[in-house]
Every structure is written in C-alpha cells, then in structure tokens.
Length: 324
Ligand code: NAP
Ligand code: F7E
Image (cartoon, rainbow, N blue to C red; front, top):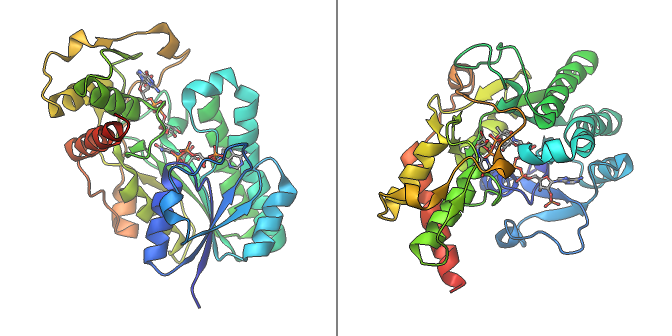
C-alpha cells in the first residue's frame, strides 16, 4: 500500500517541492488548503491531477481533525505558517496564532486522531536570531529577534513536548533560509532576482532594499525537502539543523544577480537602507552546522550559492518575458 502524506502549506514555496519529492517516492499526497476568495494555485497548478486538496484552516481545530480523519495519513508535514518576518511586527498576534499556537492545534489533532502519525514541524534558523554561537547547531541557545522567531521557538518546544509527553514521533527540522524560483516575491532573494530580471529586460530601473549587510546561509528549497522526509524515516524522532554551512551577505546576492545579466555597475540601480525594509531588530549573521544531518540522515545540500542565484534570475527572466 502506498504511504499517505498530508502537507499543510502546500501552496507556499516548500509545499510543492515536498509534494513532488513524495510523489516520486510513490506516496499518495494530500494538501491542506484554506479557503481564499481567489485560490492561490500558482505553485501547485502543475500538480493538480497528482495531489488531492482538503480544505481547512490552521485556526480551526475541527478542520484540522477533519482533514486527518478524511485522509488517514502516515505522515504530516506542517509547513503552513505566517512566514514573512517583516510582517510579523505588523501582525504579531496573528503571527502567534498561525505560527505558534497552530502547531499545538496540529499536534493535538494528531494525538486525538492517531498517535502513530509521524509529524514534521517546520522550524527555523530565525530561532537563533541574535546568535550566541557560530556556526549554529541543534544545541545552540535560541535568541529570537522577531515575533516570527518567537512564534517558531514556541512551535519547536511544543513539538519536543508532545514527543516527550505522549511518545509521539514528532520532529522539528531547523531549516536555514532556502530559496527557489517559487519563493514569495517579498523575500529578499526573490525580490532581487525578479527586479534584476525586470531591469535587464528594460521593465524597471530601480530596486529598493533595506539592510545589505545581513548575512544568511542560503540553500535551495528543492534540496531541503528531502531532509524533511529523511527525518520522518528514522527509527527515533529527533531534531536536525539543515543548512549549507556557507553564508553570504544580501550585497553579495545583489552583486551576483546583476552579474548574471551582465551588469557590473549595480549600485546605480539599488537604493539601500530604505526605512520600509529596515527591521526593528535585525538578525545579522546566520550560518548553520548541518553535521548531525550529514552523519545521521546522510543528507547534504546539492546546489551551490552561485547555482541558486543563477537559477532564480534565469527563471524570473523567463517569467517576465511571458508578460511582455
Ligand atoms: P510560505 O511560502 O510562506 O508558505 C506558507 C504556507 O502557509 C502557504 O501555503 C499558506 O497558504 C499557508 N498558510 C498560511 N496561513 C494559513 C492558515 N491559516 N491555514 C492554512 N494554511 C495557511 O512558506 P515556505 O517558505 O514554503 O516555508 C514553509 C514553512 O517552513 C513555514 O512554516 C516557514 O515558516 C518555515 N521555514 C521556511 C524557511 C525558508 O527559508 N523558506 C526556513 C525555515 C523555516 P496560502 O496560500 O493560503 O497563503
Ligand atoms: O530577509 C534583509 C532582511 O525576508 C533576509 C523566511 O523564510 O528565512 C526567511 O526569513 C535578509 C534580512 O528572509 C530587504 O533585513 C534587506 O536580514 O528574505 P528575508 P528572513 O527574514 O531571513 C527564515 C529562515 C524563515 O524562517 C522565514 O520564514 O534580507 N533585507 N532588504 C530585506 N529583506 C526583505 N524581505 N526585503 C528587503 O527589501
């Protein structure tokens, strides 16, 4: 019998990559989607005949339980969240509801419907925030710097707590930034790749950014979903850092993205330190140590930083050309 997986956050960036990966492993895949006046199907359109959608909302306990009862999954991947850090200062309560408390709703649903379901929680390097150790690993102390980071710390600990309280197979994947052509347009990498594509095609002449000095450990989302799956295939539930072990500044990302389209004097297009994009508290420098995942899961990243930037810029050029 094919294994069944339920993915929350199927319409986001990671959901479709995970669905494609699980389908390639022979899974029956279900996506949990909330009702929107206009459905957000951009990233899952190509999967429409391959996965099944069940409706529900992270805020609605009954709908989560209903989805589990209806689909009877072996594995649940909880990817849904309010995931944009900048918005989390504007909507801190909503971020807490979606990104923190909903993890308890999901875990409670699993506990009440079927404790044998294996549960993956999408935790984040934002939990390390103002870092207390470099590079960051599973044992590094959390020091979140945004309402989003605080909410993810709650999600992490409630996952650990359900594992320890009820002996559930619940794991927390602490993933560092991962990007792709499917990334939401407001995140810095996609904002840059899209603007650079538009500038190269003569559709725009400027790019407004905030802090160019912050550094992130950026990987490719397509590589990271395999690690989520591997975590649920182990004999014991545990938590893992997933990263590349390399970091780069926003400035380096900008420079490389412009270089790909043959522009070297990129400064003339970029307006940095725009107040709208400066955060009340910044996370300056993240870099992950993924040695536990390498040793125990046999996982390692496959896509390099230059390959990632090139993939994103080229995909945006193709998308923008279609609108011309
Ligand atoms: P994303 O693109 O922002 O996707 C978020 C998903 O959550 C969307 O499908 C969204 O659905 C869904 N969602 C939001 N509120 C919901 C609600 N009330 N009920 C049901 N669904 C809801 O996020 P991502 O980049 O794929 O990341 C996946 C997860 O990993 C998130 O939890 C994120 O916080 C975490 N994470 C991401 C990264 C990263 O670098 N990407 C790193 C570490 C951790 P709609 O289409 O309806 O809005
Ligand atoms: O910002 C700086 C900004 O919004 C990265 C989410 O997936 O990864 C993501 O969170 C950096 C920050 O991602 C702009 O100040 C400069 O230092 O792309 P971002 P994030 O905040 O790192 C973690 C791991 C998650 O879990 C989150 O869900 O770039 N920056 N100028 C800017 N950022 C944005 N968005 N826009 C700018 O114009």
